[in-house]
Length: 171
View 1 (cartoon, rainbow, N blue to C red):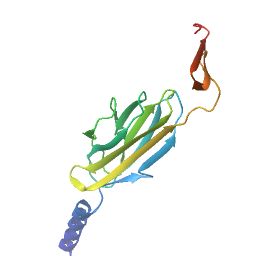
View 2 (view 1 turned 90 degrees about the vertical axis):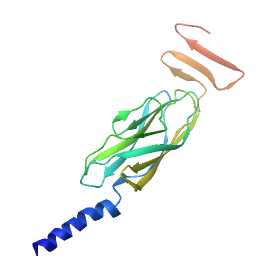
View 3 (view 1 turned 180 degrees about the vertical axis):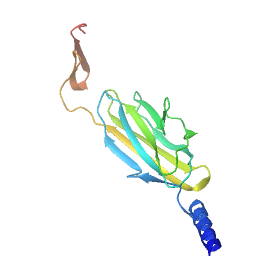
View 4 (view 1 turned 120 degrees about the vertical axis):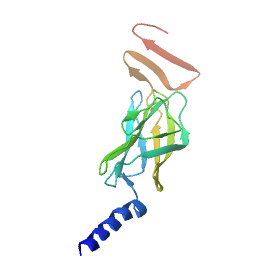
């Protein structure tokens, strides 16, 4: 009888590795959000290790559209990169714990929409994979002037002439 249970345990343990998804996306695999001007915004998608052992995931950027003038970075399981690398490998995360991929941007005052599509997969089981998508939008300001830190910019939207007024500098 003991042999029977031992064989059953081994079959169950290895079936997880063979047939189960080794990780899952917590919540949505897509983030579609409006963002604020002049502010670094952080947009994380969390991944759950569904196994009892360490999981190592690789990633590849499938498409990336960044508004010219925006700053962007990619955080991969606790390690933030300068810019958005086109591929890489995450640091391993323990069984039953979470990892993350985060798309961080600062749009400054430039309106538009930036998108990022990333394929993620287990380096030991390429059938275990997911696509992660971010769409971040800064809408144009709908006010006649912008005032921040003692600087006024007007009119908005601009028609031929842009006025910039500052307490330290008159233009």
